[in-house]
Image (tube, rainbow, N blue to C red; front, side, top):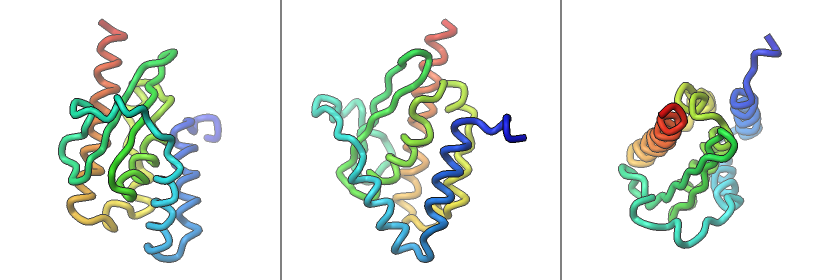
Length: 146
């Protein structure tokens, strides 16, 4: 079984273990905020309207490119918790193949209780971020196979 664990599953397990260190959700929010502050800055020209994720209450810019068969994501947000959430998604999905991104369930979201501890608008934003990342992966897979 050990050999069948994917790189993505390893990253998700790491996130689950990280969040298990915190007893209450205020500490978990602080951790998410800290992750957002660590997210590398993106170039200002990537903060364009065409890279904004639709369905997010705050502004979230997501950029994707293909490098050596892997999708590389960069992002930014004007809301610090949202920035932390997108940084978690980037940690799991960036550097993966389009197929891996398309087929993942992102189980860490359920395990750490993220969805039920977000406001409805943030929860919708999380769904929109995941959807956009999977759409990028689908577009890159289509390019590869086309």
